[in-house]
Length: 480
Image 1: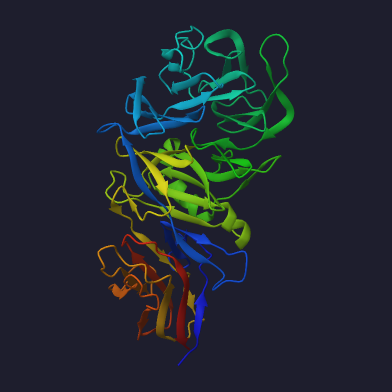
Image 2 (image 1 turned 180 degrees about the vertical axis):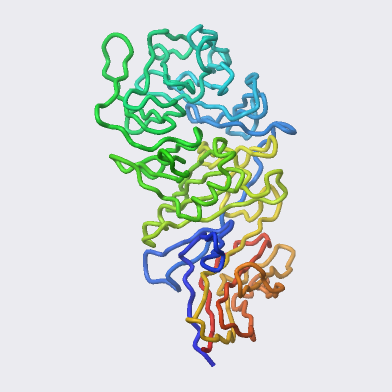
């Protein structure tokens, strides 16, 4: 009888184009690496659930969210709402269009731009919602406003052309036709903008240029000489402040898209070749990809959603593991079945609050809840490929060590399913084991007599019972 050997859980999600090389799955769970001696080098914790706080109406898909003066605002469908601390929704007016909106504030005014339409709004508590009618903003001879940011008293707005412009000081309703800038080092089309450490980053299709406020008469922003990053942006809504820096989906000239993080003087990829491949597979819709981020119990996540799924980078686990650690999130019963349903995430009233991709739900992200609006969440993970230089391996057993005994409220027994593959593509029939009813803390999820192979083997585990699944370690017993 062989000796039980632990299999690392720190790898996260990684699927190679050739599945036998790597077919590691980590869905709706994330890697936890303890900063002390633990039961194993890494564990798997469940991603949080969603609890409904408010509902704006059928088909009112969330188009964006923002926090002004501590209060969260949501554009759901064609309406602007404010979520009150009582979880009541206050309707504030109509926002035309269907696509994602870009939002920013100057402390008093909340600006909302509908990209590609020349439609924009200013909301203030005192005056309500007002459409922007200034001729510079709506200029019929220029490209439509797209992305807005705020810096030093000005709203700075990209046009989806080779120029950007800014509002008057502290007034998003008024613009001057002369307050216009352009990409100069490489006059590519401007796609997005971001403010980081009080510097203005203008993202083109091929380069990023950095501007600062120099004051004086005329247009207040001037390019910092020599500060040009040779990467463009592929998805305008993918720029996100994250972990003391910012990230985005970008690419260089004649390159496929990757996910980058700003390093202070340039950028470095944080995506793996697996993520890069999936981005490339969904490149036809990559412009519609968007990002969200949040921190929770010491972990800091940034997620990117497109038609190929929702991919989440964990900076804390990556630092502790010394490698890029990702996981995926996926919700049940969605129109877009491969992705997580959160369309935006904001923090307000001491809560993480999410807008929804399926309708008017506004929900609290809750680590103590194991469902999404009452719907079960499928969690699964597949381990790294096990092989022994083509020597035949006899698998005596595999055991998943769980924080067992969580049980279900009705007293029934949550189940975990195991299957395995010896080719990376076809898995054997699932074999089910108990995870322990309430109080059955010594329950073992163990499978025996698993046959042999002279190639390689990949184990996969799945579970969807609404309990807090924590995987402490996995042990495989093999004779060679």
